Length: 122
Image 1: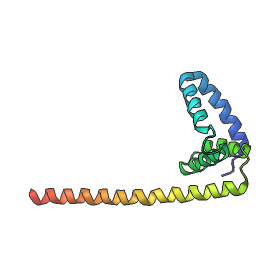
Image 2 (image 1 turned 135 degrees about the horizontal axis):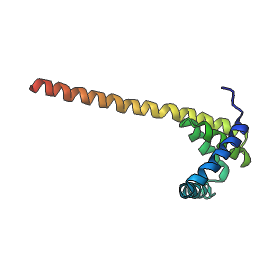
Image 3 (image 1 turned 180 degrees about the vertical axis):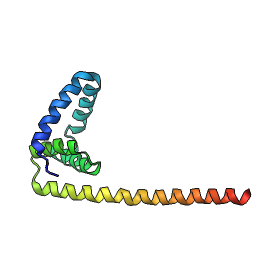
Image 4 (image 1 turned 30 degrees about the vertical axis):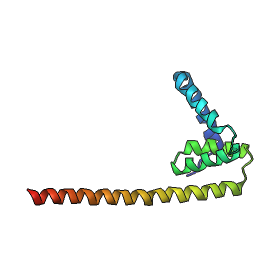
């Protein structure tokens, strides 16, 4: 996949401007959420942008990756910090799949048990 990420960010910004014009109340509320979430408190702005980048990868949002990569760099993130963040995104992308797989298997086993129980009583 050959993406020009800076160009993508610029194109998305234009699209988002159009969206802000069409749904101003929703977009204003979303902007307020973003501002509140990004406000430095216990975590600084760079750490928050790195978290957002990792989540962007885990949820597979290319547009989010574009914006949060740019924002993390603007907050002073180094390549090594981004690489560590990506390592965590890889770990968490795989880890939840393992956990939810155990849920799916338990659900399957329970459905089979109910079906077998119903078959025995009929």
